[in-house]
Length: 114
Length: 112
Image: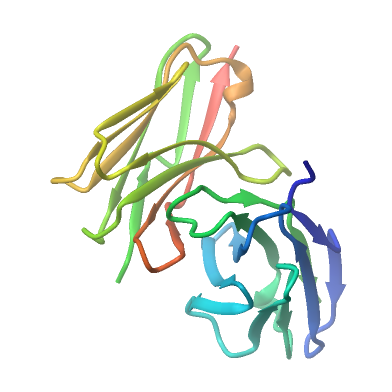
């Protein structure tokens, strides 16, 4: 059974640019969540999607957005990149609610903003 | 706001000794508490979880205890081995929020 797949694994972008990260959940998992991991702030919740609907959003600026497609694949977009957006972005999937089943995380996309 | 405090931030133990990591959560409505292990350069992996209607859960060398009154939960690893060396994260989740509040992590080093 394939795990959670995130692409790309690494990205280097310049301040002001935008970026799109992709996540394919485990087959059959309908809940997809995104977290930002940094040494200083740890794991911070970005958003959660289920059946193409955003059910919750974390305390991030509007530059951070996401969506989920009918096949449960998800993308997140960060516009007008800032140096502070450099982080490991982790996607996680769960069969339905992450409260009922633990997440399975992907390996992450490491974003570096220069 | 919602918060999970985790202690200690670093922990070194001799191989074969026990390790204990403690977390405190702020939202009394939290009802699901998973623990994740993250090895260097790898993804976080779920190692054990506990629900609010259970006081203790064990899986081989790993156990988790929950004290709802005090809003504390702890991870216990017995007979530690070098491969237990990693960063461990606790988290708390409340029904209907669809998100985890993570602790800041504990770097465990098991010395051979």
